[in-house]
Length: 596
Image 1 (cartoon, one colour):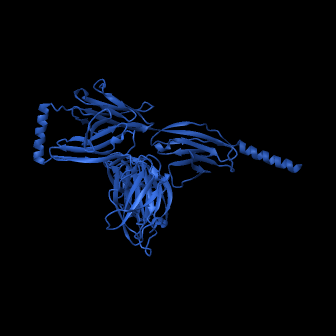
Image 2 (cartoon, rainbow, N blue to C red):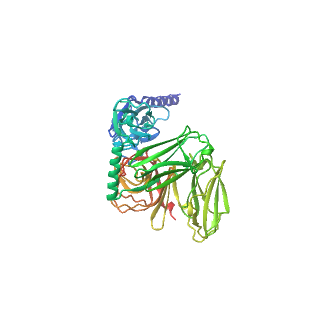
Image 3 (spheres, rainbow, N blue to C red):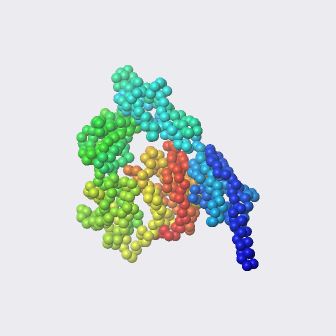
């Protein structure tokens, strides 16, 4: 009986200890300005050594029992003084907007307080085109785009500073668009974009529109005269040049789509659209608009409820008195042209676009020098191949004879039939059995379905990278990979930037939460880059050990890598980068597993 009382007394003491431990801080919501600091309170009464204090951001554990989960990060700091277990956050960024939980690590009870951080970034606004004044011709359609940033996301509206907005003007506020159709003198004036957030903070941007009449004889004659004089002196006559970001657009019957091209030239060229060599004009089904931006005119052909009669080759042509140029965009419900690549001569990878599900692929092969592709091997598609309208696959070439040279082509097939060959075949030398390298097994890779980085180390201690990004933003943006634990401790970064359609690869370094800066000695060499149809492909090389000891991280052994899976914005034509839109994914990478 005495023993039972002792056990009961022990249990009462134990339960009293656990239940008496509590958090007295109450849940709060904090509105914090960008780059400011904040302290989240957590006062714990009757602390004991049995159960510690845990801080979490969402589901991510930041601190447990006073120790950080990431020893290298300096963004978060735990303040422990007596019963106080507060979380301090410095240089608050947009990523920090989340729920933060302070809890007792008692599995038998829920003792916690949850705080909410809302990050306030004042709104900013800019207008595309970036010019202060534009001069559209009478009868042209003008599209102005207001781009607004801030947190919370600001609302956009357009104003006409010269009075009431023209009656035929239309706004698409969800996209920040102001459309001015068939402009004439009545549209002349200044248009203002206003971005307002829920705290009534505002940002403004403005652009002047001055339509030019072809019948303005005096002005026209003077401009032509001046242009002729200048062209005669410095030779500024320029034949048209046409650009397009896409050569194939996958679609299916009943969908709507936009086809666009950019052109410039002097004198200003005239643009024309054709479908399968027949002229295309505005009608109830097709709308053609244009806008001027950065010395280029963009013409956009919009199709509503596409029919099979509208599949084919759309040609965008521009001509002036000095010549002409054109680009073609193929629109179809069959698969497009594959993009072929081989990383190691033992496998073939391809990427193809299709709006309808791919059923199978045909890999055609012939010995080098033969005339026709006759033999092929069929591979059924899988659900893992698909990322939206983009389908990707890698297959080993173990069905080909070793020690021989082959030329390979690929076609994809959906329910509408076989698509086209790639623009060019891929020539591959299959290694002989006695000197065959590890092949695909030696290539390491990280992928989340949209961002994919593969790498392999050669015998000269250089790392060969291949970065593929599907559905990369069409506007100026950046991605890449970085090396190190965190921005606070310093990151050695390889940044891949797309600026006005041009791809660059730079060797940079970032310390703290400021911008990245190029290394004084760049150790990264870009080999090849393609940005087409929304797919970014880049190959580049860097040594395992860089030239600058301070800013270049040694990648020998096992080191933390940061995979930048969400693109960041580029602020200007000089390539100055904004912050990534989502925190990179960190993994430990051991290069010894990735050697040929």
